[in-house]
Image 1 (cartoon, rainbow, N blue to C red):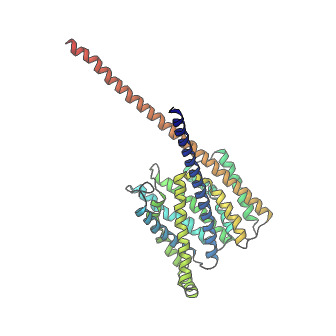
Image 2 (cartoon, rainbow, N blue to C red):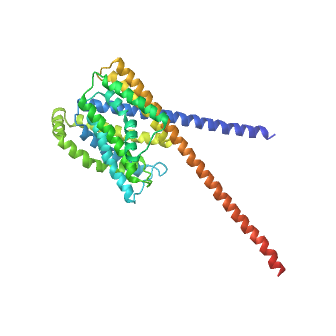
Image 3 (cartoon, rainbow, N blue to C red):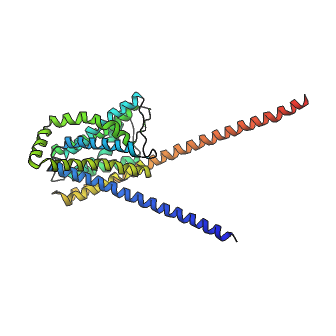
Length: 369
């Protein structure tokens, strides 16, 4: 008579698990949409203000860093420990890595934002998609690291697509191309040199650790750079022309986008993995290119369209191969840990058996005496 109730209980448990799985899937999809939307929106917003209302890209980049620092402080103070716990930095090697991050950021994001003054958003994103090739070349020259055959083929296709798209673009400007290309190789050098300097030291930093430790040091580079380029005078003229309100509004909007983008990406990575987030890079880049043609006056040729399609397809393929390699490496580490745990458990049981055997042998000896 109790069997129907047990069956109903199991069915309820299965239903609850299915509902939880559906909710998790919907939450991940929603976060992915938000992250992609913020990524594209941030690129469009930066292109808009740096080409018109606020032509001070280095100064605005510095304010983005300041907003990210303040946001990270609020997260540190208010979030539960399960979401974020600040990592304490004790070793000199860890501080070396952290101090490289501001330099990497300035070379990467600072130069990228500066390039938006001189090139279209579509070309900017197409050139930025060259980053996997730059990282592969830099890691080979510095560390001697080689790529697998599938990744090498995808990188070759990526090179061809970028060359096709950039060389055939009617909007090509040499200065914008050089600055954007410099940001790509700055990003690659920063990533590879950080790993090289660190050697075998493992330092696991949360995104908000980076924002807490590395954002203020980057201002030491960005603000003098901005002043040297005459951006303070441009900002002063813009305030005199438009007033404090509109200028402050644009700065606050950009800073809020910068921090919330980091926040939502962190939540997405926490719910899935940084490996899966990396795969979305090609889709985000392609989406930004497509949307840019509906917002900004840009020109394109048939060869340019073909180049963009080839480059974005190769970028996504390279991300997929990278994801597969990382997942395989993680699986191997997990399997190795399982083997070690089983061996340790077996050794513990054998030791327990030995203790039991010793007790049983000595006990009769004591009785005989």
